[in-house]
Image 1 (cartoon, rainbow, N blue to C red):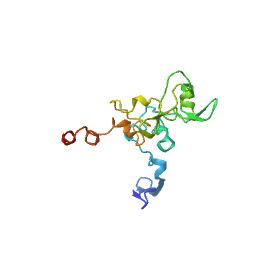
Image 2: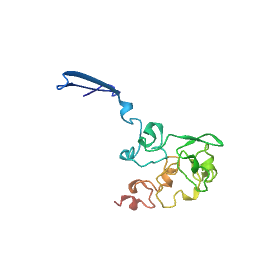
Image 3: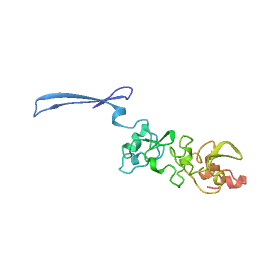
Image 4: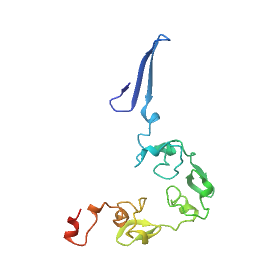
Length: 171
């Protein structure tokens, strides 16, 4: 087995003793693996359970490694495509992308549209009061640079601002 210098082609070769023939198989790495799929827990891609939210539910991740159906258009929303169109506008707010997007009218109107957050000029969320409320919210847009990593709630303790210089020295 060999990999091309740029990592884009995988070649497997060998000899079949019983059949008395040699073989060479050439594969495009992107056809075998999700090399552009950047997720925190890659072991969950293709594990048999559909996670139909971004970043797992993207073309780069093979729509959760084939665990989810391909995106379908949602009637009444020209550019809204999700795995299960029936959940758009079902009365329950799904705050994950692609459901929670302008194209899908923020889950068909089930979620409030994003509002600006005071103190974070590049942060727009449905529930501004949840920024810096002391609860760790590991989802976009809350846990993003623009929202100060949920107003500091998602920062490791050593990076959180302290109220006194002595506090910052504590482990």
